[in-house]
Length: 403
Image (cartoon, rainbow, N blue to C red):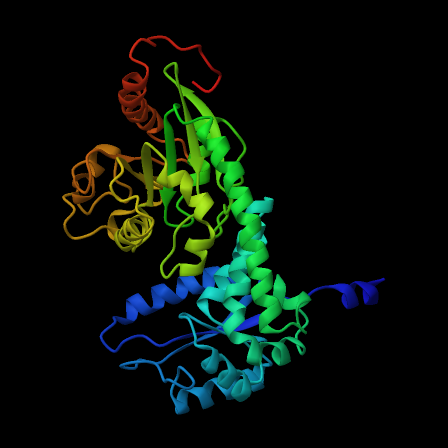
């Protein structure tokens, strides 16, 4: 029996991470970016064995890294029998081809890694169709070198989707497949548009933010529903919409896909219908993980993505989540708090520069249910302002269990 279990057990794929930062980029920032890449790698079920960093003015046009670093990576891959090399940027088709020829293992860039996570997380027909189309669009310019490479693989990271089932295909067939998927998405979009149109008059609120900031946990708290929430990147891919009632006022609350640094453009394009929940919202709740050392950069990433999808002008509530994990020693020098306390109180947080970043800024811990009443009160005020403009004579609404 033990032998059989050993034979059928699936071992984790091993990976090394590679970054080529600009020479001006601080080492701390580079390590932080690689931490995120390692988290992405863990999310798809692979284990990171080592990291390689080479500072260059610009990546090598042929192999992304320089010749010396490539030899160093090659020796490590061979010695420790590494399954794949993951790069923290997008690679050109020729770079992938050259790296595969040199290293003899699977080469995964940032876009392919994120696409793989989306392939794991997508549950609805629409999300699966969106991911599949994005995968085909990614693979199309890489067909010249991809199939030979795939024929040697046994699946795993980057192999979920069209790569496994369309090994013998050619560009024409792939383009036809993309066209079919696009038609399918258009039909699904029309269905969703009709669904959204039927609820146009109800106030609509969308949760937005960097990935893994706790949006789904907040969704569960406010709607008293069971939306999947996990401490992994992109735990939510499908948009989830729930009817919620606070202070007798009904509204629709949407939990949307999290944003991330260098989010592949093809994913933004493919997830148009999902992002329509943001575009058509009356109010955005921008959730920020205050405990993350780069939360300010995350705010900028989200704001830029909102600009990219033409939603930057919408009313926003800024909500700093995970205050239970925030510590003074992680704080910025601009904070006014003393250095004695390890965990600042909500009143102390209100005196910091963070509280002045947006009016109002609300500090909560969704996991510990800290200061949720303040969030509800502000949300109720903002929703009422929109609701009673649409329904000036509708003073009372039926009570609901979600209050």
